[in-house]
Amino acid sequence: MEKKVLLFDFDGTLVENGDYPLARNPIIKNIQYIKKMKSEGHKIILWTCREKESLENAIKFCNYYGIELDAVNENIDVEAKIKTYGYNSRKVYADIY
Image (cartoon, rainbow, N blue to C red; front, side, top):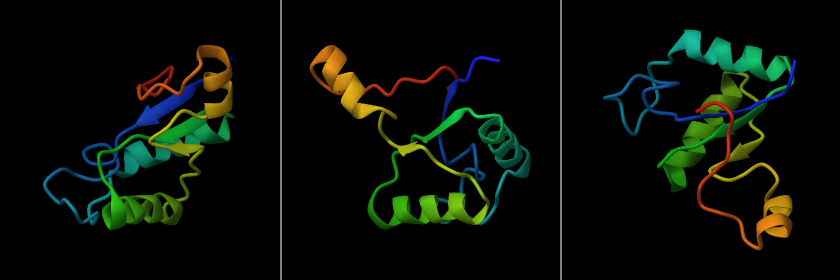
């Protein structure tokens, strides 16, 4: 099986909407899916508008639930993107959004 890059949002994907900036209501089926994809060797990117303390809390949430992130709000192989294109686009590449 070809390995993919999976990019996911935090609010509404890992936690229920309406709880911002808190993260009290995890969406377990999505957490399990992301962990399964990672265990199969796929790359995982967290893509969120959260920043500062709220972003730190989202990353802590992922760690707490065992979601191993390959990147947060950026491409996985930034150096390769710069080498290939001359810059690192703000658009983050993924096979599955």
